[in-house]
Every structure is written in structure tokens, then in C-alpha cells.
Length: 304
Image (cartoon, rainbow, N blue to C red):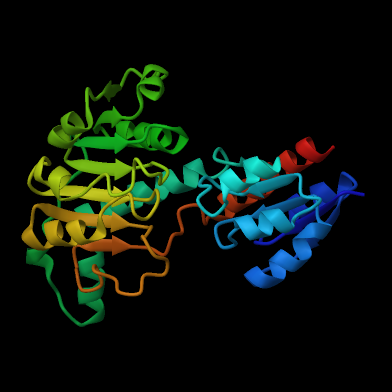
């Protein structure tokens, strides 16, 4: 009987699917790294979300390991090079949480555009800053979406529905695959930066995308732009963003991801023009349900 170790919580329905398929499923939350290294050799598949890191030592210790399944989009917590060398398949479920992440990105756009963070903090402090919180509508504004995969396309559709103009930047093959006629293909990243009133990032963190939005890029943006990052921490240079917010070059930011999570020193903590959440992009009831089923289906497919 194949054995599956679930290191981070998934929907119970997903666990049941795997059990009904004849697998022995061991769901254990919060396994310390040293313990994971000791026990992983007993399992044929490991399921993780974002919390558990599947490192090279863990993979080397997995003498029976055939599959690492990441419930969600990113794979930055899995040592893919070590897995490839060991002949261990790595899969994820990007399709399952796309809607959840896109909705959060839109929520951050609206929250910053309408000063909801400052309004909330002020009301709790007994203030009534009605005249100071004049916002801006999204309609007829241009949103630049950097990374036009599943999440980016979903957000593009939402923004189009709100009457926004959509411009996208990505690898040429991603742009060429677009079929939506309301999405303008940016000729370059600089082209997108210059045109956009709102910018939302939806990219994995790689050596090429690390700090791809930094001081130089902020200088090429419109004054008063609003930035949203619900992709990966470190894609936006946090120090440079804090400086751009302080100077007024960037009017506001919506941030769900940080270079270090949780951040030891949050450079945005004292800023009332920033909307922040603790990496909850995929954390909806519906999204978690879809992720649980999708990751179970992939385990069943690869181990059967």
C-alpha cells in the first residue's frame, strides 16, 4: 500500500479521496524539519502547502519518495533541483486557488484607492477624517498586470468588468497565447510601467524576477501609481517601495507577501497608505476546498 504524508492541512475531502483510492494517509501538521527528515523515508508521496519546506536533506532521506505535491501555486519551498536529481516528481495546483488570489489583489486595489486602511485606523482611534480621504475610482484607469498566467488573467477579467483598461507584460509565449481582446500586450516592462495607474504582480520568484521592481522601475512609473503584490515576497524591492511610498511617487500599496515571512522589521508598519495581509491570497474556504481536491487528484494520478 502506498503511503502519503500530509505535512500541511488540506481539505478533509482530499484526504478521503486518497484513502478511498487505497492509499494510507498520515496527516501531521507542523512537523519539525529534523523530524521530517527522519520519517520521510517511510512515504511514497509528501503533500505540502507553503509552511513546510522540502529541502535537499529531506529529499535525500526519502528513499521511497516518488512525488512531492505542493497544494497551491509557488514551488519556492521545494528544492526542485534536488528532487530532479533524485528522480522525484514535483507537482503543484495553480489552477485551484487562482480566483482566490485574484480577488484579494482586487480587494487591495480597492482598499488603497478608497483609503480603507487609514479610514479604519482613524475610526478606531476616534477620528472622523471624511474630508481627508478623497479616493479615486478604478473605472477608466489602466491596470498593468505583470505575469499573465491563470491569476493574472482572472484579475484582468475582473478589472475589465469594472471598466478598467488592462495592459499585460510577460514572457513572449505567454502574451502570444492570450485570446482576450481587451488585454493590451505591453511591448516591454517599461511600456507597462509608463501606462499604468495600478500595477499588480503575479509572478514566481526566480533569480530573474528577484527585485525586478526596484528604484529604477519606480522612477519610470506615473506619479501616484498604486502597487499590489500578491505573488511572492522579494519580487518587489521592499526598501525601494517604502522609499517610493514615503516620497509620494507611489500613492499606495497592497501587500500580501513579504521577503521574509513573517517580516522581522516591517518597513510599511507605520504607513497609512498601505493595505497589508499575512500571505492569505489562497486562503478562502472555496480555494482551500479546490486545492485539497486538486492535490489529491494529482497524488492519485501519479501513484496509481
